[in-house]
Length: 515
Image 1 (cartoon, rainbow, N blue to C red):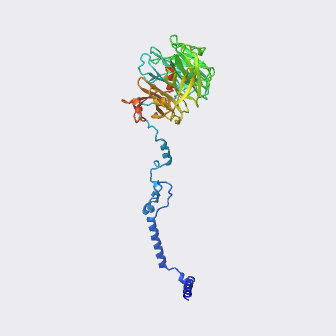
Image 2: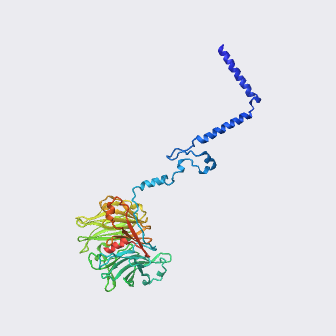
Image 3: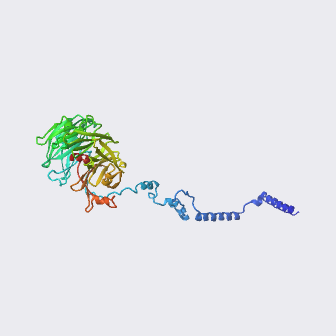
C-alpha cells in the first residue's frame, strides 16, 4: 500500500507540472526575472575575461599564452600579444637562423684589418700583377707592377704609370671598349737595374667582341717612364699564358720568352737584350723538353717548376682540369718521367712547396676553380717512375663559390676566393695531413684575383677586382706566434690599397718569373 501511495503522489505532481506547462499564462516571462538573469550572465562573462586562459598551441617552448589586461584588450587590441612567441627577438629565436648558427660555431673569426688607403681598379684580368725583385739588392722589397687589360702599366711603389697601347699601332685600341685587350703578360728586370722587360699577348675583337686575331708585343720600359717597342708579331692561336724565364735545363743562362696558346704546342723565343732581338726557337724540345707536347689537352693557365739535385720538376695546369707533371735532367734535358692527373674545372692554384731533395719528393698545392684545394706529393721513385699521392685536403676551400688563387710562405698557405676573403692555413697542418682547417680569414671586400707573399718585408700582396692591397702585420705580431696562440683565428693585419688602374693574378705569374 505504501508503494502505491507514493506512486500516486508522484504521478499527481507530474500531472500538475504538465498542466502548468500547458497553461500559457503561467509560462509568460516576468521582466524582473529577465533582468536578473542578464545581470548574472554579465557578471559571469566579466569574471571569465579576467581569470580564464587564452587558447594556444603548445608546440613550442615559447608558445605560451599571455595574461593580458582586459582593459588593454578593449582599448588597443592590436597591441596585445597573444602568446610569448610574439614578444621574443625574431632573429634570436628564428629556427633557420639557429640552424645555420649551429654550423658556424667552429668557423674561425674574421681577422682584424684596417684599410688605410683604397682606389677602385676597373678592367682587371688574371695575369697582370708582378713583383719584380731587385738584382743588385736581393734584400730590397721588389717593384710591384700591374698591367691592366688596356695596356697601362702601373708601378705601384712609385705611384706612376705608362701606356703601352699607343705603341702597338692598333686603330681601335684608343677606344678602350674591349676591342683590343691584353690577355697575358709578364715582367722582369735587367741585371743592371735600368729597365723592365715587358712581354704581352693581345687579342683584337670585332664590334661584337668576337676575336679576330692575336698578336704578341715585347717592350722595354725605362725606370724613368720611357717606353720602347722591341718587336710585335702575329699569333696563330689564342694565347692563354706567358712567362719570361732563364731556367732552361739545357741553357740555364739565356733568357727565353714562352707563349702558351690554346690547343697547340708552346712557342719559345730566345731574347738578346744587347741586340734587342727576338728569335723563335724551332725545336722547343731542345731547350724545354718537358714542353714538347704536340697537342696539349687544353689551354695552359698555371705553371711552376723547381730544381732538386740534378733534376727539374715541372707542373703545368690547364683549363680542362689536367695537371701535367714532368721530370727531366738538368744537363741533358732528357725527360725521365711524365704523369698527368685530372681535376674538375680549370686549374687556378698550382705551386710546389716543401721539397725533399734527398728522396726526390715535392709537394704540389693544387686546386681547380671548383675546389677543394689539395696538397699532393709528387715523387720520383728509384726506378724513375713519377707518382702522385694525395696528402691533405684544405677543409673549407670548397665552400667559397670559386677558388681564384693561392700562395704560401714558410709558415702558412693562403687561398684567395671569389667570396671576397683569403683563407689562411697552418702550413705544418697542411704538410702533415690528412685534413687542414682554416685558422684565419682575411676579408678583402672584393673577389681575390691574385696573391704573392714578399719575404723581404714580410708582406702579402693581393690584387682584387677593386684594387691593390698590401697586408702588413702589426708590430710585435708574427704569423708564427699567431698560429701558436689560442686566438689563432684573429689575424692582426693592416692593409694598404694603392691606386692602380688594372689587375691580374700575381701568384701564378710571379711564380713563373722566379722559376
